Length: 311
Image 1 (spheres, rainbow, N blue to C red):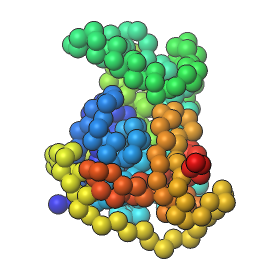
Image 2 (image 1 turned 180 degrees about the vertical axis):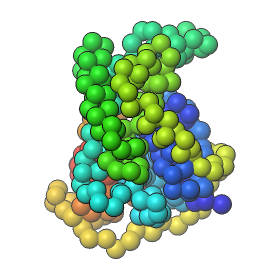
Image 3 (image 1 turned 120 degrees about the horizontal axis):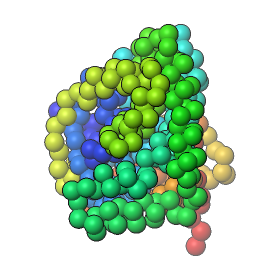
């Protein structure tokens, strides 16, 4: 049985990114379905409050943010690589970061969250479900300004033209094989494509939909259903271990210090614990939960704020 556990829900765009990478690398994985809105008590037991979807679990190690999940999957399962030969890794990572942020928020999500989209998404749900979802996402955004549908539509059309030109001479964005850039670009457009009243925008260019079909054909590999209670029990029964990694200090905070780690862009839920990892690319804390026991909650350095706990 694989030790990779993905906590996700079916319609989560960032989850689709990781599901496809698991399929591409032929990694068997265990699937824990979680609620798409709060409350999420089993999620909080493992993450300490991080509420974004998905997160990945390997024993008592909890990986937050798909950027870090992809790094860890590449490290553990290097073949086939997310970094094709001949393409600079920095180019792949920079493109993927643009897709996960600018394309996702300014293009896909701003365009997707319009009244006819929400009506389609919740057509078979009671009215209170749509209201609860809207309230949950508003809380996640915490007052951050939203981009209007006209601006998002215009931006998405520009982005699609750029992607279309890249796909005119090769099957994938940066190479003849998929890279992390493809998986990161695919999931925002996958979300748009699933919403029938607005999906036609993807057909305004020639090469994007055929590329999406190639990406979709990768599939999700072999997934086994796993209960969230079992995932918590696994974490509780797995001893924690922190490798002796180079310490990269930007905050004048020593190992073992009580800290919080908080996203910088949305879902500003701080996770508190003892700082145990601070590399050039990763931050991690050790924390104890009454149900999950001692866990290591891990974050990418980029996109997160590290602060000392003051009393």
